[in-house]
Length: 481
Ligand code: UDP
Image 1 (tube, helix red, strand yellow):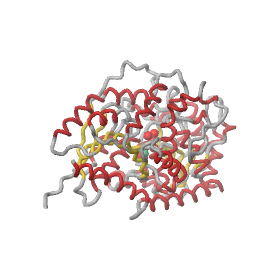
Image 2 (image 1 turned 30 degrees about the vertical axis):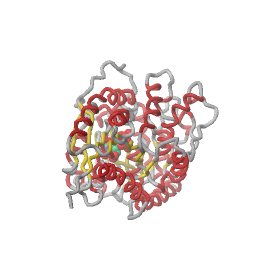
Image 3 (image 1 turned 120 degrees about the vertical axis):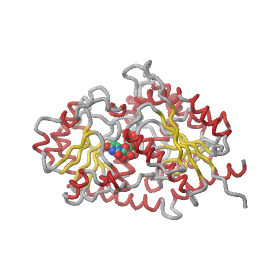
Image 4 (image 1 turned 180 degrees about the horizontal axis):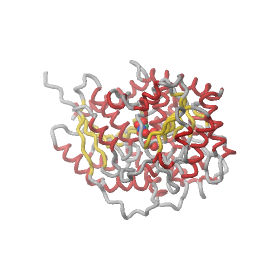
């Protein structure tokens, strides 16, 4: 019998840990598929906004995953206050010639290209896949509800006027929880901002995909998946494959030895609030002070990943803080560390999140509701205190609190006009999450969904079957060609 030739898949991860980590996990699962010799992969990343986590993730890939990096593209012509999405989309668009060169050279090589898989923020790259005749599958690193909203943007734009926050009625997408205009995607909130027309292009370009690989699962979004299938069966959208949850496994070695895990070892079960706002989430000076005072007043144990405050941009940390030699912990209110000694610990900048969430001592997660963080908490059975900041996070918070029952939220009436949650409310909602009845109910829901996540990838589970279906198509393409 002729030696079986592996099919080659090219994956492209947008800047940011929230993209690189799940795309790397997808690459790992593709090459591990079947007998482990059916696929090889190239994982491509961008130099712009790269970070230490970026490099350690790439270094941990198995040998059948090669890596490639697009060179830095200049962005200095963008205004200083350009949206994070504008910066990422511009990086993607300016790198298209590099992508064309890379795919062409792989197509001419013996490996060929069986499929091209960019993530959510790179739909423009599908134009190149179409041009070169390579099947393009978009990897959606957020939930299907938020993604449905993204696909719906061109129509929302055509059928409404004025700012979305002024819409009299909530937006009702099939199978999704109704969304108030103010909760829609952050980059839609100002029609005169240069990011707005980019969001319309963004929505349209996704339709160039042959299919969507979505990091979600049936137990999490059953109704949305059913409604989406009805629409895609009519040919309006490409099909969605719910293959999640993809969560990286707990690491041994260095992460496992992290001092914060040893501190957690000494705390009672489900007693600690873990506070972390993803890779980019940033609080204002005022909010940092109120959160600190509220944590202190709550009397609950906490583990807080502290970032430098910014009064201008709630996604400031996304762009890296490497150049800053200060310690962000020094920006906390005076005396806070001493007064909370023994009750809480603060870690600067970055923590081993998956290991923390899976520690038995963690009982709640104050989170910006980024989708990877949400899946990580769900597979660990940890309920949340939703603290959305930018991108699609407000929509996620609505879904997690109103539909999934996984999250508590600060009461709306308590929030100051500038959006700051005052310390009294922080203290009350933290106490409720860790020690109250509503927290216990959310914890119960989280444990139920954890079971759903386990079943999703059990032999014959729905996510595993969806994954086999999509990679199965790539094998066929390779054999036919
Ligand atoms: N993360 C981490 N340690 C940190 C902050 C973030 O390991 O201190 C990881 C987290 O586990 C998740 C990713 O970074 O996998 C963040 O992705 P998410 O979608 O939650 O948010 P984003 O950063 O994209 O807003």
